[in-house]
Amino acid sequence: MRKGGKYYSPATKMIHWLMAIIIIGLLVVGTLLENMENGPDKFELMSLHKSVGVLALLLFFLRIPLRIINPVRPVDGVPKSTLIAASAVKGLLYLSMLLMPVSGIVMSQSAGYPVAMFGWEIPMLIGENEQVNQIAGLMHGIVSKVLMALIALHVLGALYHHFIRRDDTLRRMIRD
Image 1 (cartoon, one colour):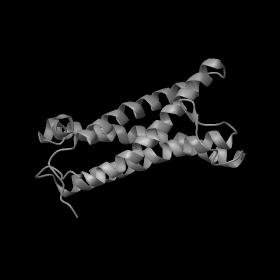
Image 2 (cartoon, one colour; image 1 turned 120 degrees about the vertical axis):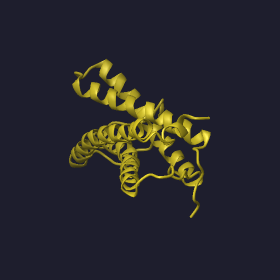
Image 3 (tube, helix red, strand yellow; image 1 turned 90 degrees about the vertical axis):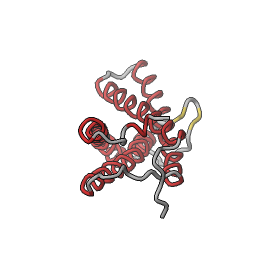
């Protein structure tokens, strides 16, 4: 197993920050959609939400090999318990980044609605099915709340390293 480098690659940093913006935006828009009444504005926003969600899924599949190819070792002196907690949060973040768009696609398609990415329709993976739709909808809602909590933990962890431990953990994700 490769030990990894000290800093993240430019591609890794770019995808990290791009996905952060996209995912936070999707969570905000998803929350807005829950409270909107059906109508043209909601359907237009839903279409955009689906397009950006599929984009997030594609970026996820690009991010995984980048993470494997360019591993980064932890900063020196971090307690093992902190490393374990960070690994658990990152693992759950990755799982959530996969489950959110997949459950959204399944939810839409099982309700009979197509999913497109900026006009390009993805193939129907499932036919109409009310039970699958309910399960996918429940999963999408639960994972969104879990994802919000994980993002908060991830940000708090970065701030802890920066302001309390005063180590390079955050700096190396923003440094050239």
